[in-house]
Image (cartoon, rainbow over all chains, first blue to last red):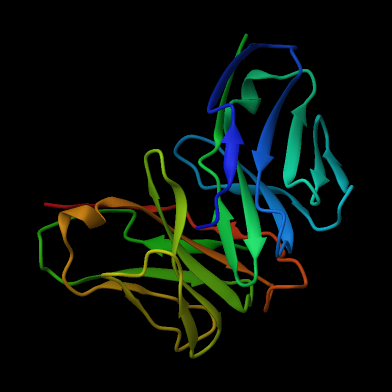
Length: 110
Length: 117
């Protein structure tokens, strides 16, 4: 069974704080690592798809790094805002499937 | 507007009564997939389809059927629903046609909340 682990499960930060979370995945048969942002009562939306070891991607205040050899990815949010409150999902791509982690639930307080 | 639509959005039904949840995308995507979301378990793949008439089992296919007769539609069929199929269901599509090249991002539908009594 392939496991994708995300930590922490939940996180509460103050507006303006920077934060990061981890996604751990199997290091064998790697094709891609996805990050999705999932707001309550909405559907998940893609943030990044990363394929190469050492990849770094950035979208505004959000960035992600990838280490395929050791099987982890970090998602960083700089200067968190209340609108960043959401569950952040990572998904490990293996052959034809995406295997999702259970997510990190972020709440940003004003 | 590029989108994935699902219907119905909410459904309460009884054990054994066949139902279909429709999924349609207007982005000409080859790849479509169904997931279920249960508390503490993450999104789990039920079935996926690489293209018309090509479908394959995901991680939790038991109790479900799918078909892909047209590129845009990928209905999920529960022939005899049971209470353990109470869940939040998402359909998703992607322009990727195969693994190994790196999937493009998945576009998710709005979700269908199903309750089986």
